[in-house]
Image 1 (cartoon, rainbow, N blue to C red):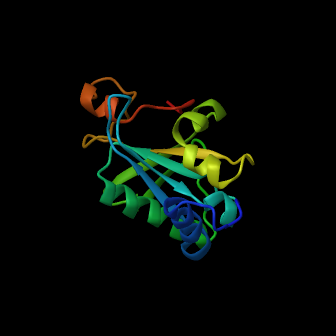
Image 2 (cartoon, rainbow, N blue to C red):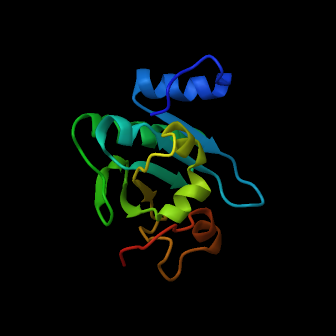
Image 3 (cartoon, rainbow, N blue to C red):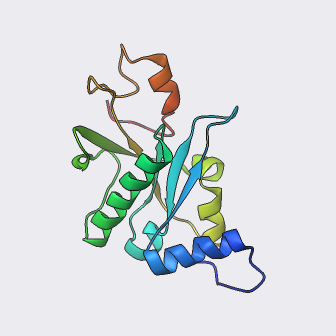
Length: 157
């Protein structure tokens, strides 16, 4: 993890302070012309050797609550890895975790890359189904739902 120093901006200091004191900092990126909104963790790899987690298409508050639940579970020794399905994180829905390839880490997790000062870390994408329990890659899923959750890497069928 990057060293804390006086020459950091207030935002950079907040990232490091949250990681050191809370165990995780959660970044929220709003929807833009470049893509859908997403939330991501910084600190899971540092504290728990749990891959950092990114989730798309959720309101900030919901994404924050979900990623805090992942952090709490990681603190209790639980790990979330590629291809795994979990039913205890999002009420009424199963979620899946999919690996995020390194080239996508560069695209989406820049603040985490900064915080880790160039050291490699793993990342997974938390994917959630629609109301009919269909994953974004299934037939019949609304285009808007599919577009709000781009799949960054390989997926399970």
